[in-house]
Length: 388
Ligand SMILES: Cc1cn([C@H]2C[C@H](O)[C@@H](COP(=O)(O)OP(=O)(O)O[C@H]3O[C@@H](C)[C@H](O)[C@@H](O)[C@H]3O)O2)c(=O)[nH]c1=O
Image 1: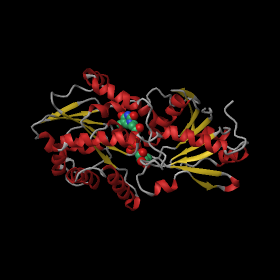
Image 2: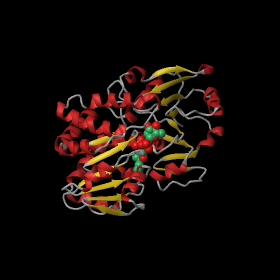
Image 3: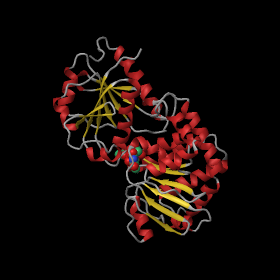
Image 4: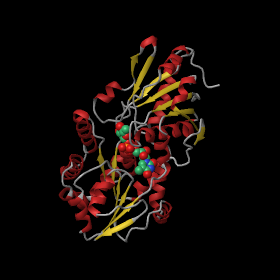
């Protein structure tokens, strides 16, 4: 039987939406699917409001989707719960760490790390790290293998996706609800959620000149600058414009609970970071991962490690197609030749995406694994009490 614990998740937003994006998805799942009591300490409510518009920016405390949300600074007066999770190595205040040290029984303390397909992840997952004052912190690594901590996946996600895909009207209704004009008949639909990128001209020209109409849905963010330069105008949120066969639509922010529908509705997804990268895989769509750039080219190793896994069972033609386009995207090269190759392989890429998604589904999801691990770590400590 699952014990109900009091969880404290700590999220420091470094940049972008991924820190709160992953944390919010995990928090909601812990509360809704595992009946855990979740409190989320957060330092950037404006970033949060992009993906959860109902959030109040200045509330001292609020409850959303069964999660208690409090400003970061409140940790100074807070008593730790049964489980403390630092998201992505964000640092807790000394005052809160002192409270962890004083708590009896001591909370299970974890650092949930960034996602990587690199092999070392399996070796480091759940390793303890002794802290000063006799405290112990465990490192939790998400990942793609059975020895890693898994990927976030809601229990009904795949059935929801399949039901949605099977209803011919679902796409039309969703697009309307998302404020998207219906794309022209037989159009190729492309969702663009990437980092800033130069040299989009060749790609945009190629789409504008293609026989098949293309609808490009652009999420808010810095990539819009290069698109506006090419368009020679400033496309406002909610506005659409066309050049030849290409229509470009500037999307508003979409609540996280509806973000999947954009991926499900698109034929090709260009995603980034961690959460949208994982969601594109659950959407089972041909996709491109714009990886978060890191120092010392660490992102190249991460990208290669994922491609090795993702393409392990692909034939050499498909492998080349994916590698060419992903490399061109991530290295800032001209995209036109690799795009044409990619688009002409879409049926095979689609089959591959579905096969990959099915293979990932055999893994236990991250939240379930985390709850089980915490329960085990907690029960190895003689006196950790369930929530009162
Ligand atoms: C555009 C958009 C995004 N989202 C959500 C989906 C995701 O949960 C989140 C975006 O997160 P990601 O896809 O991870 O991309 P990101 O680039 O925003 O986040 C990145 O942040 C850096 C600090 C990390 O180091 C990176 O690894 C990565 O997490 O925003 C919406 O809910 N609605 C929207 O309209």
